[in-house]
Length: 321
Image (cartoon, rainbow, N blue to C red; front, side, top):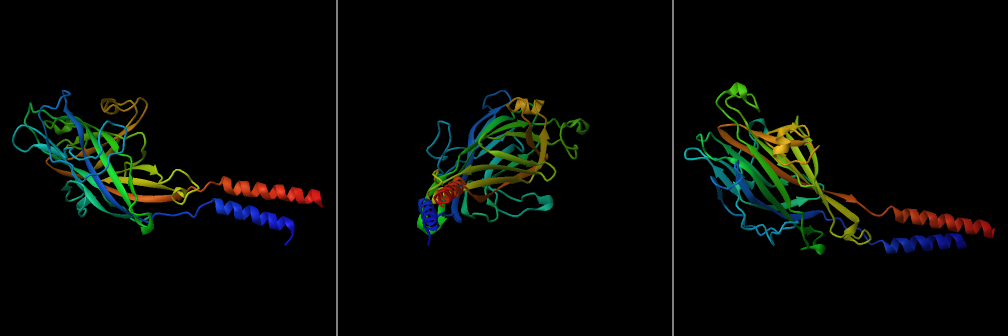
């Protein structure tokens, strides 16, 4: 072996040794829970809004708010309306089957746990049901609420790296609710008025989430990236993972930037927003599911350095010749 080849081999071996063997997490155990951090009526106080249920899975809180260390103790339900059929929001696991028109048949109150595979199908998460019933005139109605949604992951495979726990960023969703007038269906601001006007929820998405909306398919996706190690030269640092949440089950509607709906919901200026429409006189189920994907983030500079090293060695060899 001539000297150029020997040195080239040495450079390659040295670079390879400096890069640890990449480890891809293929299976995760997860726990997902969500609760209402705050809520208020249209007069900006909690009067007339009754909380119920409590988060109790012990999911770690990971976010900027002065809250924690877990999501335990938050109400999972809100109801309003004086007597009769009250309207309500209930957070719970979206297990079950989809019925007619792709709408979920049931939501079980409380959090959910299970297993999710990297690159595999989506799994059940915490969704919400809006029981939308006519309430007496003069009743307080929900105006705004903030939902904390936490997801805790634990490495299951490769087993040698478990149990390594990771708390995904806890997302804080703002909800602006608009109870519609049902007296004259021809004046419905949303929906066709059959059999009554639909109600509106506009949601605010945390800035750390990347959003994708398909209004025609009535699907709403948002994604958050994370790494188990920020050093790309370590075994666990060579992959970046993406948690994607899919919401579906009710009609999705989009609003132009600076519209009344976006402004009322506190959306930033010049930013479009989206909402969900719920039908009157029935339970409306918004199902949530998660999937995890991975991207190899090995530094391309490694190959570049190796290439430059070989070019430099080739130059040396030509000069010596």
